[in-house]
Image (spheres, rainbow, N blue to C red):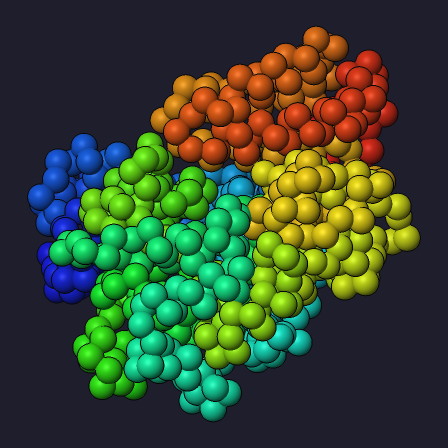
Length: 605
């Protein structure tokens, strides 16, 4: 297809945005989906449409990992080798796929059938070890599943995929978030409204003032469930009331924290709960335009959410004069393209405006000067999906489910060495032990628990003796870790902590945006030192160097990415220093095999 043939679709994309440059990523996706990659000619075409230089377009293309700058195979097989998948055997899976396809990551089969890509976390850790074939998640890749995905990848165009749909455990007991998770195909508008859906939005728009809505959310003790845990009602109250400028609601659906996969299920199985929460939030802050920034790898999530948006427009729950109430709200899905840093709210806004995902200095905070320099609230998917329940049942009911400082339930993601990985909804006061032993069935294969990451890969690790802790934000902070994104990664006694830390360090070195030198250089140094240790060439001094580098990274950068990269280094070495020292002393010969990294494969066993 010629670029000129895309002009019509490009025009429709540009109409969605207040400023042309904000359409950067959608236009690049348009090009890649039609031509397979982004050519220099395509970069010039996009630059002309947006009124920016080719250098600005090239800057974006090179920053986001999902854009290809040269022809690729008819299909792309992305194999995840981040920590949750490594714990379940991803290194061996990738070795097997390489052997069968006779190519390495970054290469394409001679017949141009498939391009193989090794990726960091796809946030489908409940089906680890897993991969993504084009737009479809497949896993666990054990036994015949590896042979099936290779057969699918090499099949002639038009041949239906033979790999089955994954069936991980997904909570459906509620009471707040998962009551409509039963149907893998999703709950759509008719079923949602029959179950009381949009009743809370109608009440807010017809019977409540914005201040009353914010008051109910504040009474509920709803805290931001993307990781920061900031009180949601207080955040909404920061938006200026007397401004004449536009106000924006931005939904952070860029779920990228290894060990986390909750937001995907909300968007795929109960998307109208998110939309209803968005309507209420937009009314509370006075916004009439909302963007959902969704990670590029979430193809199905974006498709199902768009279907729900289309339904909502047809039934006048979105658009002009919603349900005759006089309130207007338009919603646009904006797809990312592979950059973990865009989960940070200001980096997300920079990306949404058409640039590289660089975080911004705060203050000013987004509530004062955010998207397009206008007042903006950025909320996580799960946070907004809780809002309809709060207005339907009252803030006190939601608050009573939780603890004194945090209301409600959470969707906890449990993965790694457990019998039943999956998504579990539980009150925030549930203990880590209860999640592991009662909900997820305990440690698999009869092994002993060794360590747990309680809130996504950024959180400081806890030992087996530290799991009698409640999973709310304040309790985990007091325990020396954090609740983060609710991603629980369980490691049993077979896990090599050196390899586990290396996996985390590789992730952070890969995902640093490079804007701040302590982060850019520090993550690289940590990665290289741990690589040398894995190669059997470590020195005892390396451990103190790692701690010194981590200490110098903390609190010295624009965003908290550097802190997040430092915390695993500090906690792994502090709690398992004997194992690190023994590893260095033996040159890696005594290590366990439970988190075998690709780099460690060549080390002596």
